[in-house]
Every structure is written in structure tokens, then in C-alpha cells.
Image (cartoon, rainbow, N blue to C red):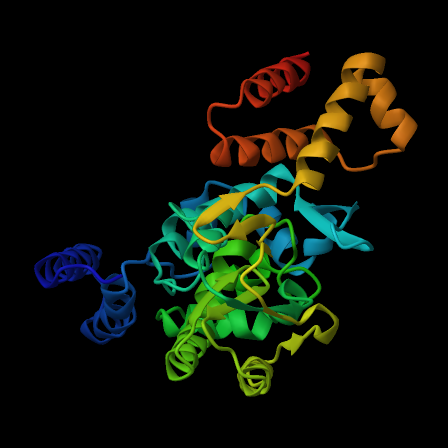
Length: 346
């Protein structure tokens, strides 16, 4: 998302006057303006060096360097149970690193283009918008990208920042603040948006492929969906070839081609004809959980289940909010959200 030409010209001229006022040599001014121009055109902050970055974020330079070169010391890790079984590792940043990531998101990432095919982690889009697009289609192909965030390397992130116009060292600093163990961590503030930005080209290629096959394509995080009146098996191979060319792998165990007009599950939402609803099992699980919390107390409930997820209460509220999006007038859901928020305040 670039700035208007007049605004770009004015900002560059302001920088030029700033350098002249500070007595910089003509050659040095020319070099600085060359570096600054592309950053201003791309509507991102000008960053000269590490001290400048620390001032922009509002954090001590020595602390910032520790986060850049030893990011593992600034994360807390825990596991949550996947809906499909197994465990998913979540790495949540400490407040100091989270502050840096929020600055990067607000000032750089939020301004970047994301494919219209992406529905996960996108403002004004959701699981519901993703499911609605596939409502009324006879056939549905579901594919899963294996280890989505871990497959996005720090080198890929560095290249992204360099393309915006940042010097290599600045690009490395920014990428390091967004990565853990040389890849995007699940749980970082910046990971969702970065994953959408970096897969812009992938989404558009899959979108063009879907037009060729006369089907509709959407992506929600690591889940790929294709729907239409006819879906040939050859589409699976074509999608796999494109996805692997970007360094990802398809989880073949989660590839499902549903050839029926009956109810289908799209990102956790039941889709039948033109109607979307929540699966009964989803409602039943939440209802049972609320029953036990009210009967035995929240602390007793999490102790009995040996819950290790520090955001367990927030996740329950999130599930109820999701339910409310589909059934906004459900009294049970409204009361349950209010009840859990009351526990959170205690």
C-alpha cells in the first residue's frame, strides 16, 4: 500500500532539508535519500540502524539486541490439544518482545497487501465468511498444509523486509524479532499477518488454478478449500505441486474430497445447502464444560482435567463468541460468556 505521489515528494524533501540543516555532505545526503525513498514509497517507517529502531519502538537498545540474538529467552512455551488429536506447541512472547512485535505489526505488516482468498487472521473476515463462500456447492476438497508456521523460514522473512527497501542488517533485526528457531512461531503477534503476506503469491496462483477448474478457492491459515459442481482428482495433484514449490508440504492424511450435497464441515462450521450451523458435537462439548465449571468451580475443573494451557479460560470465551456469531440471539451463549468473563475478573 503506497503513499500518494505528492505526500512521498514532500516527505523526501523534509528529510533532505533535515540532512542539510545537520551539515551532512552532498554525497552522504544522496545515499540517504536513495535508501529513504523506497521506504517512504512503500509507506513504512525509515530505520537507519539498531539505535534508531530501539528509539522508534521505545525500548532499550541493549534489551533489543538480546531479543534479536537470543529470542528463545523471551518466549514461554506450552502445548494445547488439537481438535484432531495430538499436541500443538504454542510460543507466546514475553511483554518486552510482544511490544516489539506489536510495533512491527502496526507500522509495517498491517499496511501490506493480502490475497482476497485468505480468510484467517484478516480483519472483517472469519471462519464464517470462509464457510459461507462454499455454501450451496455440491463438491468440496479440503487440504491441509503440514507444519504451516514452522515451514516459513527466517530467510523468507528477511527477503520480505529487504523488498520493502530495508538494509540487510535492519531486515535481519526485524525478522529476528518475528522468528524463533529460524521460523515463524505459533503464538507470536506477527506470525498470522506475516504468513498471509508471504503466501500472497501462493494464494493468487491457487486462485488462478481454481478458475481453470471452475471451482472456488479460499484459505484459512493452513487449511485450503476448493468447492464447485465438479472437482476432478487431478486438482489434488495440481494443488500439491504448487504448494510444494513454495517449500510447504501437504498433509495427505487430511486431504478429503467430498462428493455429495449433504452437510459438510468447513473450518469447524457445518455447511448444508445455503445454511451454516455449528456441529452438534461442538455445542455439546461446550455445554458439558460449562456444566462442570458451574457445578465444581473453575479451579477445581481445570485441576481435575490437568489443564496446562494458561489461556484456557480465554479459549472457552472465544469458542462461545464464535457460537454467538452464528447464533447471535442464543440466550445460553450470552449468559455463559458473561459468566466466564466474571470468573476472569476474579
